Image 1 (spheres, rainbow, N blue to C red):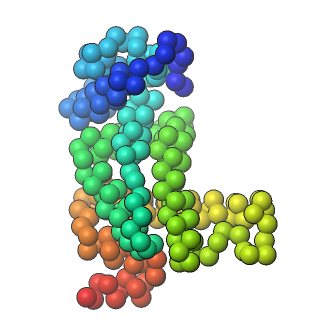
Image 2 (cartoon, rainbow, N blue to C red):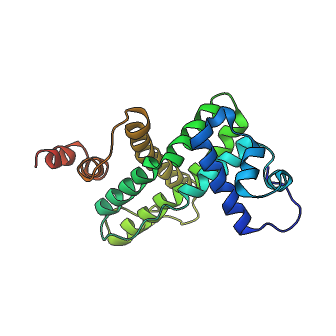
Length: 214
């Protein structure tokens, strides 16, 4: 849990998070300490502990800051939007600081339930904003049906739950495929792969096969 105290400095926060990622790349999770991060960031160790209770919280926030850089420019179609976010996500995962930090916190979360919850809240749930934005754009273009039928109620809790489940599924499919290919299989993602994957997601297996055959 983030500590309270004197007003936080955005500049100090950025320096701390950057130092955390750099230290992870050089030292690894096991050797990383709050004191090492404080030294690299040029701040007192007490400054860290006023903001983060422990190393787990600090590293998750350092990873979350990278994922907050992801954007979803309007590329004119659902297919193009998916291709774009897949390539942007892949480029982010190819960065050493992202790859090292993400793999470290995921490994630690396998035996730390509190850390798993923090990862979900700080990284996963925040990045679902991209799914919601892309879906809204596709609905406005007429590429996807509305969350609520024309004769339905916008405040219908069942419709809201269905929309939330859809967002969860879409996020899991995209993030799962990209993370698996880069971090598990050790393969790169190029535009050809992103295009075929996007065709599969948007148009189904026949569409993906047609793209692959070109």
